[in-house]
Length: 113
Length: 111
Image (cartoon, rainbow over all chains, first blue to last red; front, top):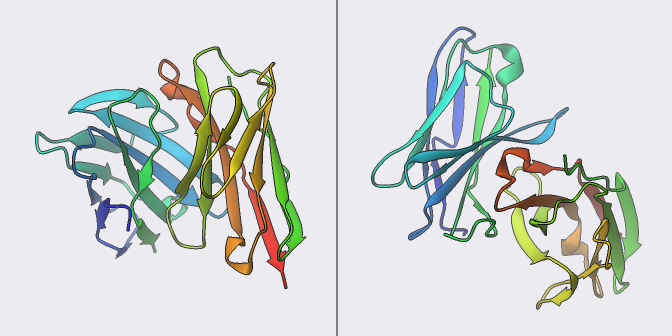
């Protein structure tokens, strides 16, 4: 158990819909990262937040957005969903050092039908 | 951009030492090298991290040559439970925007 929690574990929705994925980092970790993993794309870095502020941005689509709240939990919002958005979405957290090791949650499996 | 290149797959037998090499020719001065292990449908798990020379912990060693353009993860005496995908990640304090995982190396340990 990494200490990172993600909800829901599974999510099935239709094209065009909007969903919200939630992540709670390990106690004391200020950084939260979001990743997308699909069969043909590998592990893709989406975005990082540090203590409520956006720190780094990767291959995140404009239809996707994220935020980190004062209690440090984070939400990833996916809108106008397409079939190709079906994937595992992982959240990770890390400590205060600039490039600390990341601890990954169990993931949310999103299926868009 | 610190792109990484790893072998797609490797096979080994129980009890052998396995070395997985990652190439990162464009590594920046501030970049660290981190290795993760991932089992199917689980999040990646941190194995080891280093900046230069050699780092060892209870599960693996990481060898980084002086030019830092590659790194080698060494797993001593692998077991069947080490069958997984291993990722090399290069990134740093000032380069998180380019934090990208490689395609990973699928290690299969046979009895």
